[in-house]
Picture 1: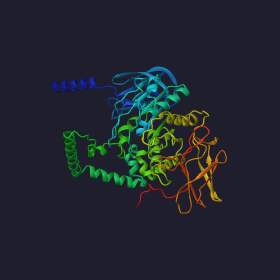
Picture 2: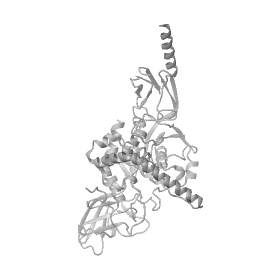
Picture 3: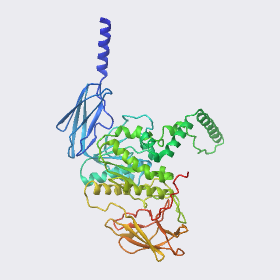
Picture 4: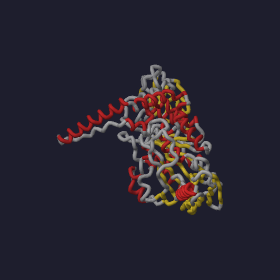
Length: 517
């Protein structure tokens, strides 16, 4: 009995020696807490342990559950740029330092949001001048998995020339505008993943329960079955062996060899397109952290399924809001830029359809909006380097909608079209501004069609602050009009405040990206 008691005592002492408060990476030194919000603070400790959190004159208590997790909520606080400490006590004690209170934004999407400051225009000047210790940065590693993750490897850092270079350019420039305009600390969480598909950012069961995504999930399951089969492994090994042989032969002959190695089946299974993967591995560990809102730059990977995106994108936004339990927090996105070769004739475009799905999302969700950048793209690069203008257009939306400033913020949008006397009279909502052209006086970018649905370039002229007349020789009875409707449109219509007119169409012809039965 004494031996058993000794072993039990030693085991208990060993456990108590190892037991300690564990905090997620999102909660740590240098973080920014969202002002005017009851911020959740959470972590893990031995089950049944009483935990206290002390910060800014308040102390909150909780007890860990059977899974060891505990959560407290701090009372809302005003913005504060004076660094403060937070003490957390349980089986051990932790002191977090250099904490500020201000505005916190999530920066999400694919490669154009991930695109770093050091890879953007004026990188040398932007990095050298990035001396903003009250802007705080944290990046979430790219982990694709079907298993829910509770934490990630990362840490908050002060914004400086040493830390800003690898951070999201759109995120940093956006946060800098808010910081300078509001004069409060800003926290930026970068969790973007290049090439990611929107469905990967959504919890899998949410998609499976929604009939609109039956085809998406059927294709997903078929892909999973194929990639996990013995045949897939055999095929990959054979392809890899053939590739290595070609590489060796090219090397022996002194010839260049640029063919990529075949991708392993695990690439898609653990990657950024499988439904639920990014939600579980990247987003979930940050859900619940106090935020003001989110900015999003994505859509390129879903352009071929623009019809589906019209449902998927607003679902994703609503899903995030439901998971965060902070109500309809602000969510702003970047519409796809112009890209690829300019087409000599007007016609259909999957990228134009994706832009339309993004525009429609403004009417299906609350507290959302888009920054139109149809003038900022590069035909030969899917990653336009001008990220500063992109971010500033996003920031205008937040400054007006969330911070009460009076600024031009929304690009003109299609309102109506009337067809008579061989022309279309188009009315735009200019949101208090007026129309103008840029570069040349002639309006560029319009196409028109008759009942034959054959599109031809049209002549357009501005007839009022919000109106244009559009016509084309050979189209006596036009029935529809489009503007900037192509992958890379030549278009030059802006508001007088410098915001480009949103690409649009007056017709409701069937989308080319609608799945064929």
